[in-house]
Image (tube, rainbow, N blue to C red):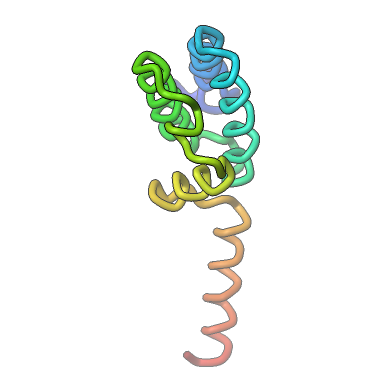
Length: 115
């Protein structure tokens, strides 16, 4: 990735279009779950969203594999998609800008209090 792609995000746009093309090949219930997953994961994004790309790659791969095995979406992800997404970002350490700011604020307060 060159500097221009990093600044404009064009590399992510290309990669995201590939994800969408892969999702279009999934059954309808999987496509609906994919939309919900994307919506829930963007809450945990950093400023650019670049931190979520490996997670999205893994999710679309999981959906493709479970769909080809003939599993239902509930068997693959469970009933709670929001919980599934929270577990994903917790496991992969995708901190949002709010998490980073919260940590920075806590560190600054601890310094002021001398702890």
